[in-house]
Image (tube, rainbow, N blue to C red):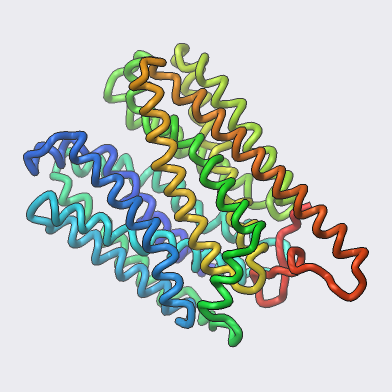
Length: 410
């Protein structure tokens, strides 16, 4: 694996830290700015809104910008957004800073995934993308707990100043380590938009929205489940969240080589396993040691879905994968918001603190159903192309690398 992937992973570490750290800092922010915790919770949604809006918008605006320069511009915007958050004089300006910091998130991962895939040889693209995502998972093990602890002792502004510094380090690493990756001569906004309209791309994005929502239906309320169901103290919350991050990292490590070998089976297997683990968590949550084991497994199988979904939309977007890749992160953030809302609705309905696990299982099954349907449609299309002489379909022609290589989806 080329050293340039380290620069992408460092950037992902900073992005992952600022995305999730706000959940642990809400009480501190609310007290300092004189507002309620539920109102401060809008800061979490503000970041997600920035991701959903920024992913397609910034990717479209930068469709003709060389990839390395685009990554530097996106990381610069991320750094400015976090600095604005650290210096925000009031809640409104902090809200704006969170939106600004979220804008480059999806576009960065979208462009970064395409660059990572082009840095390696055929058959290793998924491992390269998974290596970049390792920065995101390690952020949940180290970055988020450390940043939360820092914010609790030195104030939440110190947390965002540290993330700003991480952004500067990431920019230096990108400038030094990432090679020049030109935009293909035929690539442009029109081609990217047409690729986004591919049926397989749409079904892949829908799978991400439904399947990954199952993860966040539980993750959003894991802190409350730790104290209310597992019977552990508040000081254990950081430890439980770190265990989830360890699971995410293990899932990312496994997903890369598995996706390179067989993309769709990896996706089917991870979604099916996710549904089963969520059902199991409904019962294991009442047994502390078993609950902790389940949390690790949940993080692993949940995050194993990300790499095959990322590679799927990139492959099916043919030779204009950047906008589809970025839109995948909009889909993941819609999943975050939707899963949290549905899990909260189940709790509010009086179904109990573990009810989000069953809600998540239903969402994972729905995502699996969409994924299997997409696979059957793709297989049918390929079969049809073989019997229509001289008119092969484009569904099996995509490439995410300069050598027209792709991960196998058979």
